[in-house]
Length: 314
Image (cartoon, one colour):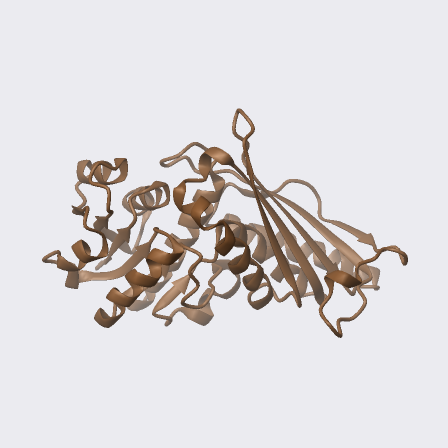
């Protein structure tokens, strides 16, 4: 079976973990190259030891490789600003891009929710780690009842947040909030990220709050079933993704001031849906507490596998 060659730009934590996933378990992909900008990085050294072609001259070095024309998909695991530059240089070659930064040049893609809609997009954006973990839940709720407001809180171990993550905090909140609305289906969305300095480091935890108009008690069980099914769908490609406890649905008291959270003209919500998640990493490259990295690389791999399988007519 012919596999699609892929390249990874960014030799940091996300890029290295993704490379190992491709090498160890990809069905339709093979590593073609890894590009970085630090010749002394552990990611480039590890790639070389594993037989992967490397360059420390970034996207320009990647394009200059003699077999660059064989690369079908490029993952960008750098930063939002760097992706803008990388995309501008790669787009003329017709290379398919999977963006693991919050740059959001292309459409937001959350595999369990909307991958089929964007398989032909030249530049697919994987939102953020918090988005990949929580947007499926918002979408699951919105399939049953209108979500007037959705708020997500992503808590990750400070040790798992590298320079790229820290540099992209503003983009994280903006991109995730927008994707909660555009992909999750919420009328208004908000995202919060917490870098938890606790020792020993804690596993990624995510909380999803949805304000919904669902006065019928029968809809509550339907919401629970929808969320549980969605969690199973995500866990199919992120094994460490799970519900921390049963989905909670509580009535909003009449005197609770939620109006400031709602968009103009929104219906008055009747209930709050609270979902608590945990994401444990597969520990391919980093410790298991770094579920925030694992869910990004796992989602990116899922997208690339589908793109490659479709190209092969499978």
